[in-house]
Length: 302
Ligand SMILES: Nc1nc2c(c(=O)[nH]1)N[C@H]1C(S)=C(S)[C@@H](COP(=O)(O)O)O[C@H]1N2
Ligand SMILES: [Mo]
Image 1 (cartoon, rainbow, N blue to C red):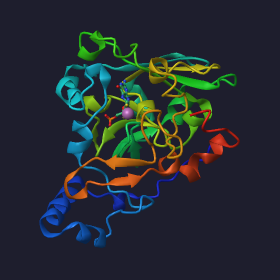
Image 2 (cartoon, helix red, strand yellow):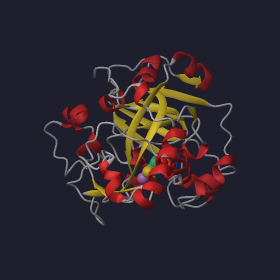
Image 3 (cartoon, rainbow, N blue to C red):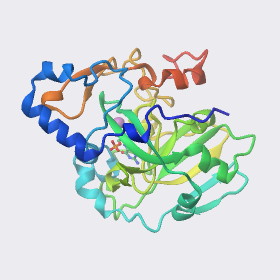
């Protein structure tokens, strides 16, 4: 199995949210765009020290269609979701199938901070300081059997709490899937927090998948079921439009969406810092994950 992944950034490198906001204000007041780049803000997309987006951006510009298709609908509506008690059913090709209570899972997991690039298929991006644990640790808790090849995920479906599910914009519940080696990769996490606080409902409380080298829609929210299978599982956006959304959906600047280019992305935040930046192969995680796809035609398996 994949080696444990070590965060390049340490706790000491994390910009406290307040300090970050403060610096942004200071710079917005004192400097023009040229000044900003002189100050060493990441112009090159390969900059190692990723500066997380403010809490406000991360929690007010969302995609969570169960609460509506507008970017601000989730922040308006997701408070209706009951997130406690919560449990995750882990079943299929596992040694210990069952309903795992969220608290029992948390008690056994090590929560880490992971500052990841996040790239939506709609060609916008942010940097998010997630808190969470490696999905591999959760799967090992249930004991994956040797015939398992894929992992299927399902979001909670509660029409009475989720106004968007009363329309047929997608085939509910929202479902996603990974190949087992992708799921076991140390970059793949289940997030339970942002900026050290509990993850807000609009971002997928109480726990959601985060796969940083894939388009954002793979990172399924508010997970209630994880099923190990030997067949590639159906995924919501592929079911909705198979020509536009493949199973893999790895971030790839060279494979365009049928209706737009994926070569660059709009960085959320606007104002002085509004800019497009080049999109990176595997969203900047090429060194870590390219080996998973060795020999695969990434145009065909998009
Ligand atoms: N259940 C569910 N999960 C979902 C979505 C959704 O509509 N429903 N949207 C996806 C998309 S398109 C993106 S870009 C990310 C957005 O995550 P964020 O709102 O935390 O930034 O969630 C993904 N997970
Ligand atoms: Mo997305």
